Length: 274
Image (tube, rainbow, N blue to C red):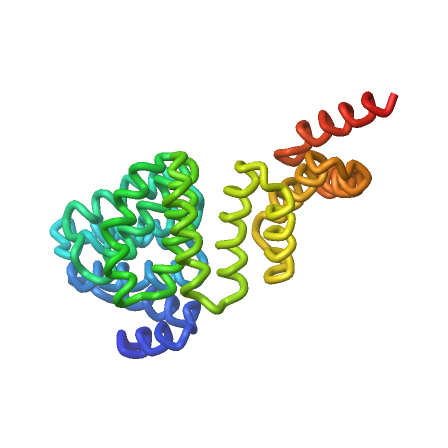
């Protein structure tokens, strides 16, 4: 059992077998610096295998084994990514910042910066997220188009929530124009639907939402898409269609984020009939 074999298995995606060899090497190795390297590589294997708690255990073992380990930004980076996967965003932010304090100019750290921006976004710190996205947008545009397109989606919504509607629309249009991927186009149209809904352009909102579903029938937020369609029909005076959508939504999402508002609109409609 050699480190070369462990790395070969790791690179080919055989993480469980690679981890077995790493464990053997850790137990057989007395040199603390070498052992720390094995723990670091084993942490990545666990992370890629989806065993995030074990990845964190291995990362903690790196510094316990070699307190002077030089590549500390990598330690904090793996730890942060593992916490992101576990949805422990406070800890993820903490370790991303620790990693970026040490080094932030390398290619891999551009992704760390982007992940930090996504955490700010999820925590509703939209201005901070935009500042972070701005730092890496040019790099992604030149070198990593898929990351750039994802960044545009987050950027557009950050601008929307900051009520910068003009720039938000430009960003979603930019996303739409720069991808032929229907799922990404659905994301851009979803953002544009928010803007048309706010403008009370309900017919356009319905058309946009229907296109979202046509492009991606497994869209990540079909509940919101359905709500915008249903509500748009209500405000267009098509309460017959609204009722169909509303009943379907309350059945599919009985404890959904829009259930209270839908029931209120249904109640108003029923009172107006009486």
